[in-house]
Length: 284
Image (cartoon, rainbow, N blue to C red; front, side):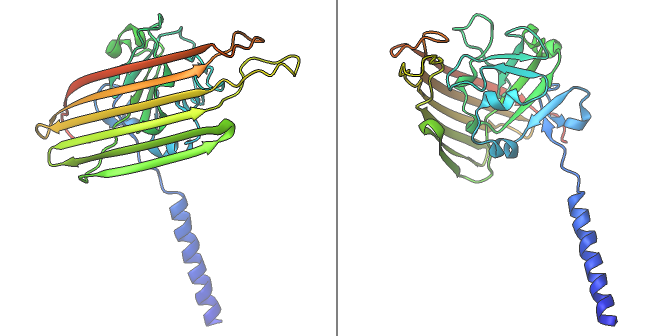
């Protein structure tokens, strides 16, 4: 009886410990998009969603437009189509170009488009650290382009080590190959980052073959992403950073819904650079 009682006590203790583990509260995400200052998500009165690195890693087979399409209140037309499809983003029913895209806090635009929008095909999901989404009008802080909301894409990964690296490669349907290499680190007051990503796919024909024997060709995709970051901690509260980013892609395009075109292609490329001084007052 004594042995049985002792065993029951041990089992009860283990169950209690397991229960405590399962009910542990997750840490509150820190975001900066709501008021341009770092604060905990629970302290903001705005509707904010933070897509962290763990969530991005769990969806490694998707692209940026597919991740955004799955968020409440956001619609990305073309997100589930062939790679390289024209993408149009809407937040809470706002018109085209009224959702501001930020890249590390800096507005990103595509001058080749007329609606103030940004081509999401130019960004590689595996080079993104986290995504902050602020729904609803944010024009007081960000101007008229933020009537529908703001999507802040943070790319910089940080490390306290002199050098850190991560590599990722995947292969899937339609001979889709993706590879990413990131090298980053910090030494005293200096920090840096170098990133390169490649996506290549044979794709499929976006046009529908009504006859079944027209032998429509596949619409392939080939894209590259490269970025370099350099930052310096001037003081405990003041830091400076600069970056240079180059993105390009080329994709095959059909002549219409039911019309194939073996020679029609579309291409886009972007070169962005910027510098920023950041002052942080207080600590979380």
